[in-house]
Length: 404
Ligand code: FAD
Image (cartoon, rainbow, N blue to C red):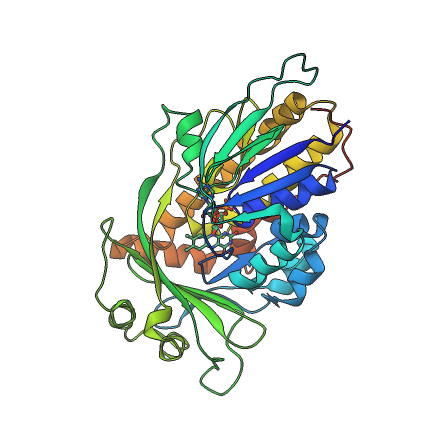
């Protein structure tokens, strides 16, 4: 009997992780990605214990850790530099059993890509249709799904829709769902072109967030001393600036170090600008027939908890574990939906709330009350609260007993 096969639509973090997991479960996998270069056009990313554990289950945890910087120092501050909460990375690592790490997205993406055979990646091909394949005359195996891209048609036993927040497959499978909406925040971000030091020549904090009124500035430091910074602004949808770096310098003028140093070490053409969209209306299911939705296609959330990719990684491992251990694809997909939907949608809700209480809070009295409340919170409790979703134990992936 030929082995079971899956097509993963989308080669982002979620799609590549799902492909690695399904291969561990013994399936043949093809990833179809519309971009002509397989990369992640973001800057940097933080991965909490749950994301790192998922990567370890996929066999790439060590490589990811080697390319990352552990986040032990930093926390939350006000624009003048006054500390609101201190990050205690060592305590968090002790509590969660794994550190929080910061890594350039390009490095994470490369590690995931390299864990897959080159022939399983089809690049520069947009999936345009997914529909039930016609069963062959006298066929004994259950109906398959046909995926079409660039003049090619591929039949598979399972399709993973990892095609991101603008998912075409989600629109097709859930035509009544309203789709993503603008969160009210826009984000500008970049990686510095050189290492950045603190004012006294020491290393900058591993991770820091600074909240103003309707604005947040944060950075994630990398092992080589460079850092990604992000500036999140409450702004009308679609706002664009002729010189984005100049706009960030203007908006964050007078904010504490190392913010000016990070901006001074940035080339103007390195700045990326995206509106933050999210799925406010939860999907009624993460599966439809033999299609599993995963990552931003299933539960795009705001970045205020740094959990979007971590949840996509949880999805990937959970799907592969279910496929590997359930007797059939249908029961595996039912288990995937049951184990992932409630949890990831709760994280998305909390991320939205975190944004409202953090970056999006603009009314001065409300900002003052929030800051006072944070300062009164016992050390470490705030960060632990923000990271409570990081406490997740991955299921193990075993070679498939699932039969299509
Ligand atoms: P994507 O990365 O969007 O990948 C989808 C892929 O599908 C793309 O490559 C696309 O080209 C491809 N595609 C789309 N349609 C088709 C088609 N029809 N055919 C073929 N290919 C197609 N998460 C964290 O865990 N930690 C963080 O610190 C963090 N910071 C963030 C900061 C910001 C500013 C933002 C916006 C998000 C952040 N996130 C973070 C969230 C995280 O980036 C996303 O949740 C994650 O990248 C989603 O991965 P994905 O694979 O589901 O989707």
